[in-house]
Length: 170
Image (cartoon, rainbow, N blue to C red; front, side, top):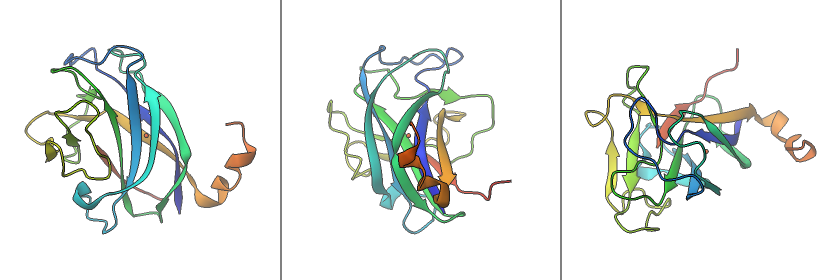
């Protein structure tokens, strides 16, 4: 069983400059469950949402945003992570990784109204679209997770649209 502890997001890539919101712009990261494990976020269920700010735009730096320990199911189940921000036309909420072939698992959802994105309804707003054919790459989004038994220790420690298939740690 896996527990997500943080989402990492890069805002804007220097190798593919679309435009990023300026540093300090309010942003959010999300974790969703895929209840039927079909790797399609149309029926995604929001598990966690955390407010943050845009950091290091235009650098490809993955900024780590801690999330409350979020159970995402047993190894082998699908879940999604995402990032959002209010942005001007031509700006993107995350950078695109052009160094690998696209996985065909990158999606975009949003709203034309500032503050209108509803993470509980990915089909609302502008709809939900797979990036295949739109961009040749994947979002620079990652998740950190720990096996569930270790998650129980997190409160004692000092202590982020991209589908991810859990795998058995090696």
